[in-house]
Image (cartoon, rainbow, N blue to C red; front, top):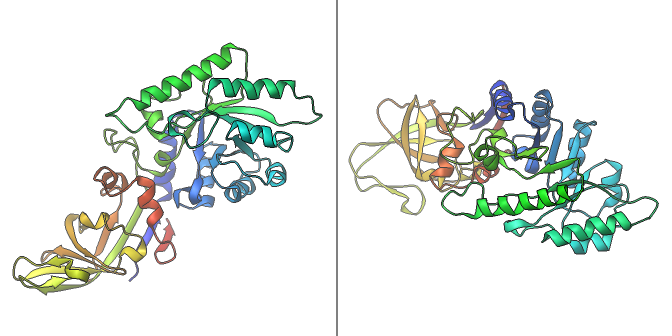
Length: 357
């Protein structure tokens, strides 16, 4: 028996189509497509009619280009290997005014998306004035070949926050940028800002935008808790197996460092073949698993095992569900276990059996 990580291919594809909803989507495939597997995800997205992709890694961007020769591939992090960017026709962000002045000549022939910093302060041109400065300087640049300004973009860092006003502030800031530049006669082939949370909050793509840049929703996790589980469906299952069921008595300690103390005699603990070495977060072990359709509490987490308190209905070789559409990644995000992407990223694909079915 070995714990498994598996994806139902048809469910994954159906969710992609449902999220897409006939809108123009830029699929975020960073970090090996949220660890679903880059090749698998790109193939499913192409099948669904999505032909625009973004990532933060040049290495991944090249892999996407090889998988999708005709696609638009956008690199959200600036890199300095401009020859490789040109060779593979990768589009790239412009992260700052300083970067522009230092490298605009070297960027000749590369499609660039001007980035607006906004409230996240991670990257981008800081103000409307800086955006105008780049556009004006670029227009007045008469070198024989120069970079191509193809896109305009930002990232909403607060779209999944409902108790503060930052999302409305960053959205208003951004829409002012977009509308002002368009009113001044600037043209962009691509304008994109929305992540999964903004896409659902706005019931689609914002005015004057060409794409929504969607990540986590395509992979089956809700960006905020008030969305129905029918809107976004999880195709991923992570499961282990009961190795044996042990009986302990009141006062017995189980697991490392006195992790669990039995409170009653004849307490039954299932020993399960999955642990933090397989990527189960310690915060996840504060919650439950599903065995035979019922939820049972995890009592202790070890590297290759966990203890689950069970009853007489649980036996050796029973399956133990850590994640599926009934006990979802996003459920535990909202319980404080960690971000959707954090839980997905923690999974150890070297120790878990990986299946697409």
